[in-house]
Image (cartoon, rainbow, N blue to C red; front, side):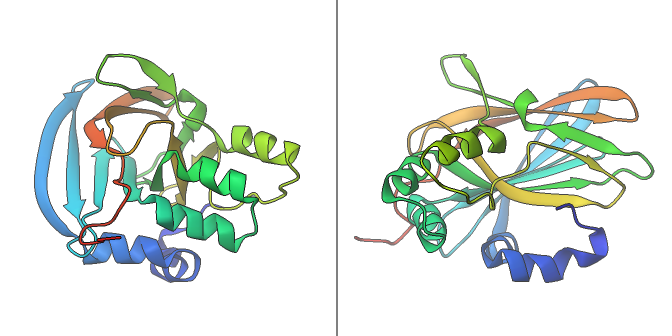
Length: 210
């Protein structure tokens, strides 16, 4: 479900306390500037001082995207709570999982995204498609799992101020670095951006001695 801008703070609290904690208790520590198709693209990196987890936030030509590291124990807790078989819980916890928030920040245009168009690029230069919600649901259906929440929807049309949230999954090991390539449409034009040198969450939170 997409949400209007005025609903933002309430729905963060009701549907995902972890979003509010990560975004608003983190501290800004660096900014990287680079250009895509001639437009300024600013990536801000936030670090949560309590957990050490990172958030990458990009604002690019009316398209806003935040990607929040989620550690494996948190992912396990989410899916165990909803009764997924343990094998499926461990399978998705083995992915590099990010909480994702998209917004249309343009002044007057509709924004469109499609996860199937997104890619991640390894340090060896190989590019791979981001796994979609439909792909996960197809696999879960085979093992009798009807659950369909939490994952970022495959696609969406956003009016000005609308936003969406959900998990984005990358098939890479813990602490792996990669570039995230995202695409979107605005006012009939196609755009592409890159967040460089992202990193999968560690297996343990900062200060966790288990």
